[in-house]
Amino acid sequence: MPFSGILGHKEIVENLRNMIDSGRMPHAVLFCEKAGYGALQLALATIEYMFCSQRQGGDSCGKCPNCIKNTKLVHPDVHFSFPINASTLIGGDKRGEVEMFYPAWRELVRENAYFNEQELCKAFGIENKLGTISVAEANSIMRKLSLSSYEGGAKVMLIMFPERITIEAANKLLKSLEEPQDGTYYFMVSHNPGKIIATILSRCRIIEVPPIESALLEQELTERLHLNPEEARFWARCAGGSLGKAIGLVSRERDEEGKRPMFVEILGKALEKDLPALMELWEEIASYGKEAQRGLCLEGGEILRKIYMMSLGLDEISYASAKEREMFRNLSGRIKPDFYRKGYGYLTNALECIERNVNPKFIFCDLCNRIFYNI
Ligand SMILES: [Zn+2]
Image (cartoon, protein in one colour):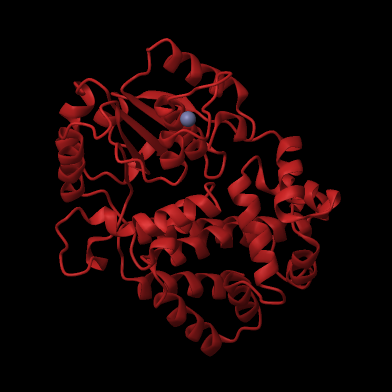
């Protein structure tokens, strides 16, 4: 990916290019964004530019052997690290477990480099448990960076979601982050910098990646997803500057033609006072993976907000699609006005419990009960 292929972020690109041209590239750069703004693209383009042997017009050439390897994410001096879940590893493979996921990683980046953490877990088939970057992985990172580079140039470690680095792993990495060997560079992409261990955070140059401009996003959606201008405008507005979110929303709308989200089912059964049906739903949710459970709670909050806006007659700014409005209209008149705020609180509480590894049966039994009695 050359700089010219990046959607927006001209100023950041300019800064990155200047840092490389002038030989003042910091050894640890942290890109912070909300999912889908394009931080990974920026990191990959910077790496490609660093390694390109025939830079032209302030950009990588896209044709030299280094560019070709970087485009395919197979450059021997560019390593990747991301959260994985140790229990999914086959037979305690010791050759550096992250490599097992490289094929899936390459495919995901090729198809949609604007993914969120949930989509990464899904691509790796580890939806059942949140991944971490563990001590074993930190050791593997140190080992890779201690070898001399294959091509005699720089060595790069790109870490996706450094907020998942455990304390023990962070302690292993600190020295290398503080006094990196010459020619060694760390790039990190975070969607939740507030959760990064402070000692890691303080050693990085932080680049805040802003939302993509609305007009650019609309244009991209028209071309990429073949939407008409009106649809593109609607989804760009819903996505708030995140191409990843827009792609996710549109593909879900297309996939789930006619299917109701689980949280809408819960609200429906609670309004009908159908407790047995509600019990079946919470048991089903308890069997989901942790990421799917988080997803349900986050989506639930969005749904509540949309129905609330519709109940106030503010359909236009509810950001609900035509299909959703049809689905929610029936609910918005029946939910008690004071439920929206309470419901949001229940979902927030459930999210905290998921993070703390509370038994999911308790979490969702409690959530559904509260909704049942207060809706
Ligand atoms: Zn090149």
